[in-house]
Length: 207
Image (tube, rainbow, N blue to C red):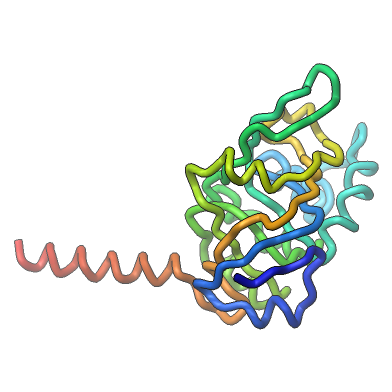
């Protein structure tokens, strides 16, 4: 089991290979559909003008994402009425939903790790080679177990997006993941998809 500390250095990223189990320790943020679209529209493609707390939020998360990790997660959070936030469940969200945005977000912020489930496509795989970065597969169905890796919720931004879509800033320790897309153009997801396609073609040929 390889142990990595966030922020992650380029050398450490390039040493990772698909199939490797890893634990992550440090500060990361969560971000799903609303966050990715907001980042693209407001700061990367700049098709909308920043308003409200946009600029303040961007300034706060930019140093966290430099060499950092973003987690596709819609958490269940307690303490919403008191501000004493605790993650009750922190399971991964299906990542392919962020495929239109992820590569551009990785390049803009120099993000080294993306965590989710189900893998991502060619655009993200190319960004993993360019940045460099990797895609980490988190264990689906282990939401409460993963939540135990969250030592503390350090803050939240864009709560107006809703609890699952907000940007949660987390201090994590020994967060368990597996590398399934690496910085060398390898993707277990693409490999499995290719194998499945071949099996399907063989089955169809025999019918």
